[in-house]
Amino acid sequence: MNATINLEKHFPVLLKELVSIISPLYGGTFIDCTFGAGGYSKKILENKTNNIIAIDRDNSVNSIATKFKSKYKERFEFYNIKFSEIDQIQKDNIKAIIFDLGYSLNQISDLNRGLSFKSKGKLDMRMGLNDFSCDEVISKMSQQSLFKIFKYFGDEKYAKPISKKIVQLRENKKIETENLVQIIEEIKKKKSGKNKSTKIFQALRIFVNKEITELINGLIKAYNILPIGGVMAVVTFHSIEDKIVKFFFKEYSEIKNASRYLPKNISSKKYFNLINKKPIIPCRTEVKFNPPSRSAKLRFAYKLENGCDFKKFLKYFDYLKEIENLNFDA
Image (cartoon, rainbow, N blue to C red; front, side, top):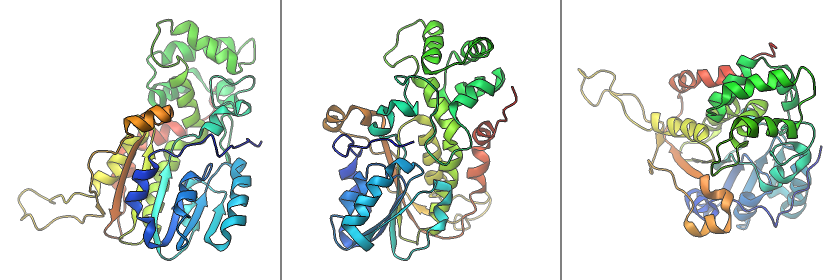
């Protein structure tokens, strides 16, 4: 299933800020973990001493990658893999690893993919290299499992009645995108600023694509292949992603005493240098020009040490990974 991607319609978020952080003017190899329409990669490749390794699980970007390869030759490589497979890449002189966790306008606007509540027909939502589609989730998951997905991945206040209505309705008919939107609108009668379906569709996209597990594993594996002194930069678009990235950088950039009774110099290592504790957000001009950027947050940190096991990080978000691993128990 291929999407048509128009480079003129997609605007990479916080591009100037990101470029200033990763310092691409000095040459080296940069890994773009969410190649998409190639916005970040194109900017970095303007300097002829820079190389890009791009990855993306979405095979619809293959045509874009082919054009980049034709133009930039040996300075560009593309891998159709997921975040969790980034450790397949073995390269020297990696200066930065970049994650942009947002869906591109091109992906959302391709109504055949079912990523948007404006889509028609069968629910899909697969970004590529998936085990199942959204249609299978809606058709087979139990009411309790759907409730958990909507509550924890969408922070949906009406998770219980919506999941209950889905299970009732699917006994007599196939639930497609329009039907799901109608269920949500009938239950959520109160008007709000966002479209009523936003949270449910977000929750389903996260679950179908295992976005939480992929992000957690991707961050850890990116740390493992990044040389000391390299920078990791992550752009998030919703609170769950930002919570994960914030914890990842903050937890391992602070020196903590093993015990309050021990001298301060006896402590654990710092694995990151976190310069900005607060995220960088788009300026008013960018938001006005590109409204989808309004929820973006950019966090970054420089690697200081090897050898972090990330046990606390993994344990802290176990509850989210458990939800992503729910069985089709309906």
